[in-house]
Length: 108
Image 1 (tube, rainbow, N blue to C red):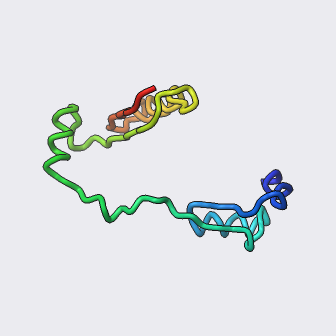
Image 2: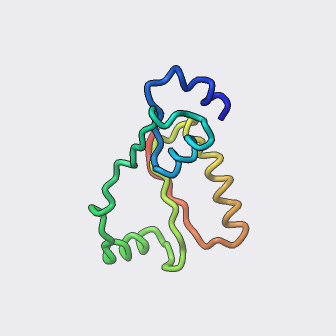
């Protein structure tokens, strides 16, 4: 946070994805409130409705049991995305008993 604090004067504004994150940084004097902007994630969740038939079909297609949690990673398959670390973390969860599947979608 020290770097943010000493470079704050170089910026026009700072952004965060939630009001609580913005408030946290302001309280810690990491940056000034007058140059803070909260920009919420740009996904309108009301546009997404659960389609139980499609859900059941997809689970059957990919052999995912009803009680298994699905982790979905969508992005470029490049070194910068660090999928190696994702696989290590996921294998740790499975080792400790989480019933889940990891699906990775992308190209690159």
